[in-house]
Image 1 (spheres, rainbow, N blue to C red):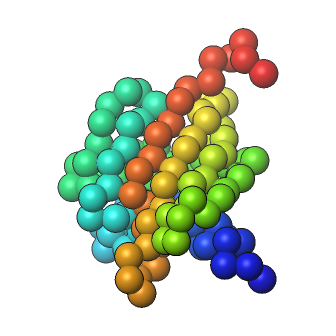
Image 2: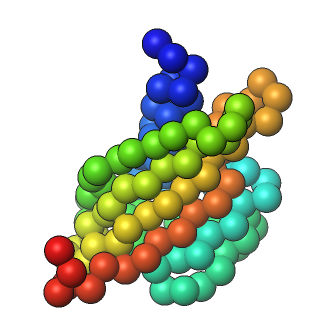
Length: 127
């Protein structure tokens, strides 16, 4: 297996873990997946920092056990440089679609952590 495919698989696994309600409600589990310099531009257009995301994630969509969950699809990924993976994919949540782009960073011997995330809503009329 190539280093690129292993890195991409690790980043995809991290994305999927972040969609798990048990991780979303646990500050300690979410902290393992978010880079300390994490930034997100959400589908709402809001900019989120590391501390803001850790504080708000338990109350965000997809965090309720037994509630609606994000349905991801069409993951693609590439190793941009050693320790830096770019993912793109799409999610559906309660009928709303978003196209997503993430950068996952590994520093030293640590695991990959989400460094940057952006979500763009997909209007219903778009295919």
